[in-house]
Image (cartoon, rainbow over all chains, first blue to last red; front, side, top):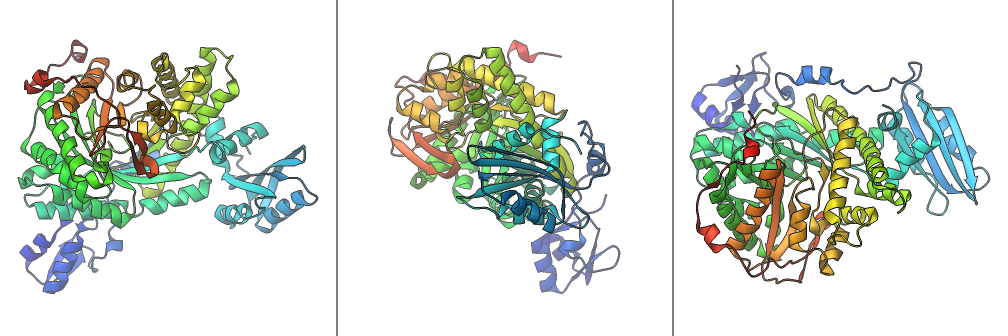
Length: 171
Length: 455
């Protein structure tokens, strides 16, 4: 097994012009300092100088397999024809143009509305949109833009990923 | 597109927006066994480097999941191998430098807490275990983010009463060293019977033997969601209906935890371990386990019927969780941290929730005596007795029990101490005048009960 760590003490003991470490070796900050002070180069086995970003964390022998095998939960498949989808809900005071304001914003952000429902009770509306994002548009942009809309005396928008609803409501 | 009804969609949105449902913690477990070194300084160096190396991306990943899914993830934490296991080769007697290394790593990666300043001493001490016990008060006083836990007993091993005695003294010393903060160091210190080795919640988080190199464990909460569900059910529904609605709610909450756990594991390139579904109250309005018990039907938390109501609640949460995921673990159930639950604080204030009733409740909740304040001049023998009682409940009932108790320096029964934030406000409770001096002076172990012999 390759060396797990390179400490300052290891650097001092090595003494030579360079220390060669494995791809997954964790070089401590103290070791880097000690090497710099003594003019010792720390290189990876592939030849280049060691940097913190060149060493990926070694998550253990079964990490990759574990990730692939994690499927005990029957995640209901999304419609294969649909990409990333978001569920947008809005609640607030009803007024003319509120639906078009929100759906207009969705369209501008690259959202394709798959399902829409709206109810008005005693002057307040509640609206639910299921939105598919066209390729290249991000969920994050949609969420941050829509959640800024409305206001304390107007309406509030919430955007969540469709997977949350699948996990919570489907067996 | 999987069709959702408006009701389903609005239920989920309501849970998160109005009922404070959240992912309470995403905890990355990191095995530190390979950091053991004959030189303590090198051990500290390796511990710091390994944690920073592995957890460097944790906060970023948790925040990105929160953004991508639209659900809040409140805390990011790290759990490590019990430090006593890696301190051995150095032979060091003062392990505060290791606590400082953990604290520095926690600060470097931006997590809220790091758990694992831990020892297992159910049957006896190694030299490193002893060094860890002796270092706990100074370690907790010298650090901000480090949490400490010790395993004092189990159903298989019995209870190490010498360790219970030592732990009582550690609690008193920790309170004394953090006296200017109301003994706050003790809020980061807990002892266990039947300790859980994949617990993502602090103060008891650590990664035990048998856990992989790194693992992501997730803790979900949601007392507010359960509270609202029972409220909607009304007072006329029978108890089976109450259990059913708690179960269904716990199912949904657990599923959300599993989604986040899988996503976090995938993005960090490691394994998903467990989802711990625990009703963990916070001082926020409505986020209270006490409120749930009162909605189930007791006049006040602490009045007769409270233990039965809590038993129903804990069991229904576990069942809902077990149906939702094959990876339910940790402590899963209902927590009753007194100072963190506004309803419990009121019940103590009004003289309804006594220490004795709390102890009874711990025989059916998912952990134990949690965030309980006692007078600063409580004797070591009395603390020893309280801890031993709690360990005995866990040992005989084959369940996890814990004690997180704070002797508040300079305060007497009925006085208030404000810790602020999530730790809340406590009313100092009276442990009574009679103690257990002779029991305390006896040394040795309580042998394992018959229910421990299961081979």
